[in-house]
Image (cartoon, rainbow, N blue to C red; front, top):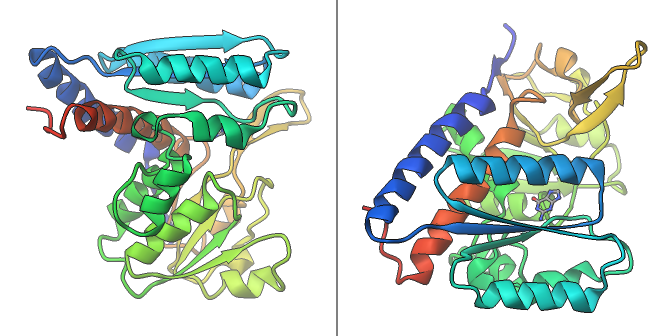
Length: 292
Ligand code: GUN
């Protein structure tokens, strides 16, 4: 039987509706959560993401502050903007879109963001809190991926999880979240030997490697849950373009129990989780009183 296709688009729409209702309750207390998004340069994919983040922020009833800086912006100029946003009381969340131009040290910029406003969860303080399971702001893509996973399997304890990809944005935080749920976690990467055999041991596969359709159907244990974080743009023979994941969907759908599609899986959840982190940051900064 083909896999259940996890509808990330529908789940993200439900999450955004909950967020919009929380934002309306906060408005009654005179609080309007604000998200500042900073884009340096004109990377086309980043421009699309930033536009979509701003649109959804406004649709949820929140304040959106967009800062588009030229590609030749210096690190000092970007740090000055981050400092100003740290001190701006209308801003509850700050997101600096990655990748940054190579002349700018991304680590220095991420460290400059006030951890309380770090809605990406990339500051070392938040990374440490999440790693120790003691709080912190959870990065949006892993947070959304966990929600999708839980929508098909409430109890994850004891399952074998294989994450393909060791990035700071997805692979490493995803490993921490799955560990916290009691999974036995393996993080595979470009040096891993016999990746197909390793993936075959997994009850949960998280593909976050950035190589289109790399994970094949024959690698999947029957009944596994597959979360595809990849977003790869491919040009077809007719010259049009479409998105594809890191998983060979048509093959894997035959073997897995459940799978996220691309597009319409993890992607929509990521932005919804960004809005959710911003509302949480807005309440936490004001003494942790939940909306309502
Ligand atoms: N670029 C790709 N994904 C992300 C993300 O989650 N946050 C930021 N800031 N940049 C990204």
